[in-house]
Image (cartoon, rainbow, N blue to C red; front, side):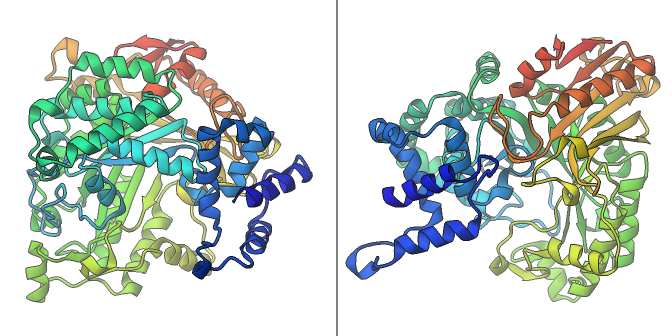
Length: 581
């Protein structure tokens, strides 16, 4: 293995300094040559790309003298990581994502299509990748974060910018003590050193393999072991501001009827920046038929509160629900992305599929519900994708449900590719964000221009500022919200004065995102990060807010981005950071 690694390093040194990585074909040639004569029957396993980085990291950690003899500086190591990185798309959006599941817990809902796996939180199945990791780690948030962090590092991804995504039914249904403990444990896993993390993981795994561990897996662990103080959480927040693995986004999922001013104030105190909200449909009849209990007024109020609080709004929206039709689905989605009461920032847009044990199975057996044909489904998704505005991102079109668990409905994991191919064949263009992300490609500053889009919601005027190249690819963007003072009064009319976190004279930056491969803090990697694009977006947002008479501008900063915003003149101010205009 060492000889193979040293040859790769030699080629990187000999290549032009402009060359950031060896191409995949050349790398495979080198690996293939080193595999000649290695026979499994002789006990000599074949070398593979996925084993090279773990080997390199192990030598760097356990044998520093040998690693020093390789004479690798920071620039060469960066190029080595780029060459050996596995699944580079994982961090192409600018952050490394870690998904963590809460323990099994009763859900207040009873949706027709929702599966129930006794080992999992409601609506999740144990075959899903993130669920398997959660099960292996006994739903312990610390262990889940630590194991994923290690896996991403061994795959060659930078992990100093982390987006934490908490899944598992409705977050709001869990006891508040558990919520505080859960968030605190995730931060603790990111704040501790590698040695501390390894030791704690070993201790916890040993503790969880006994009777207490079996209870934890069943979702019945003693609550005394799953509580901590809010003061301890805030202490972990302060540590994360300077940590090697900083939280640049924290996401939880819940239902529209669980969103109130009080619940959002608590979530914001946890450091949350984005809410995934299960809407599924805006058709009152379809919602009722599928046992979705939130009415349209509740959904609209949830959108208004989330926007005024500054949260990014990530909506779950489903096609092919019981009682719907392809034509109705297209009209329903048009409402979501066009009517001022809604207008989400992100959408999970996926078809309903049939899973065993759901109430929907009975309707399927009776002939009352049938999945759309592939042609029908693609037609709906094509129409919806084309209707999606340039300030909205379709994050996914399928759920990670194993094909063997799907009794009827779409089983193709590449559904998005089929939809995009159909749109291309029709000669049409896609405006939604994910399709236009600059991804693993580079960004040339002289090719970028700053474009300003604006749109109105029922509670604010929104500006979407985006850096785009000549092909319309997006290198970064900022969401600026200018709240309507009258809307603020209506939204918080029933709240006590001290609960209201924002005022009519304050603008709100809801998101700043720069694309490209995740760059190490204070260093430049491929893509657009650390080229000053974020700073210029924030300056443009401040100017827009100032021109429209706003006195201050808030930013819904993540814990790990507080230092960055302080460097731009923002100061801590309650739930946000604020700058006087």
